[in-house]
Amino acid sequence: MGDNGKPNDNILMHVLSPYPEHRSALTDRNFSSSALTIFIINREASTLPFSKRRVRRSGARTNQSNNVVNSTWRKWIKLNIYYRIASAVVIILMIVGFAFAGLKLGSGDNSRSVYKTTEMPGVHYEIARYSQHISEPTSVNYTDLGHIPPTSGHHWPRWAKCGFYEEELPDELVVHNMEHGNIVISYNLVKKEDLDSLKKSFSDVSLSKLWGVARFYSGIPEGQISLSTWGVTDSFTNVDPSRIQRFFQVYHGALGPEKIPCNAHPK
Image 1 (cartoon, rainbow, N blue to C red):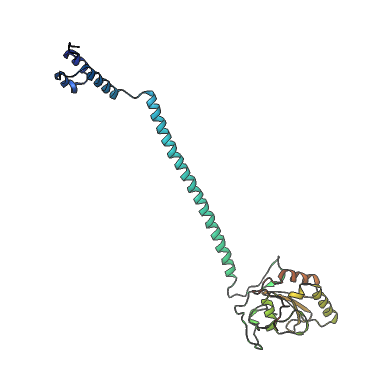
Image 2 (image 1 turned 60 degrees about the vertical axis):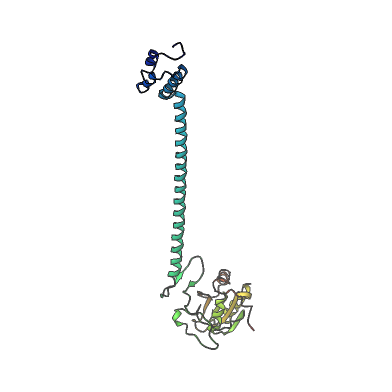
């Protein structure tokens, strides 16, 4: 160090030898020792390697950032999986719904298919494509239905009142009852004991007072009884009280497009 507090040239040359780009400072005689010290400290600090602590901190921040990215990615994957599962469930439900609707629509083709069921009594028939009111006493040809007595089709605006009739009631009248979900018993019994037995069986069914009409019907063979409602007929011989009871229980007010008891009779 010189007398004036400034470093001499030899000291500067030694200190600045690692930094040739700054040797021009040798020519600056105002370069103080304190300035030299600050320069060396700053220069050394900029070239020193990171400490282990700084490396650990930097690594921790990097790991934390990676964890956030990985967590976000996992959440996105889970949401994507849930979305795919929900979409698959919706598609399956739609396919099942369309298939079920197709089966129902398929039953309305031109063929007069007849099928029996094990759960419900009787034979089920396709509903007629025509089922409108016609003026009384216009008659309707029901032969194209393929079954007697008819269970659907055009009919009169009037319908029969609940009860047991020993006279023959027109089809055009009682088909309207069937449209209301009523049960119509058509019978062709010649023996008085059979007729009395049928009357008793009819009156024993409490539902017959609201939903039942019984009529003599010459359109079926002698000795036959036919229980009918909208689109269904159960025919048999010999009076069977339990069969009549079950038919009423299953079908009263069930199948017709209009649910109107036959005791609600137009005047």
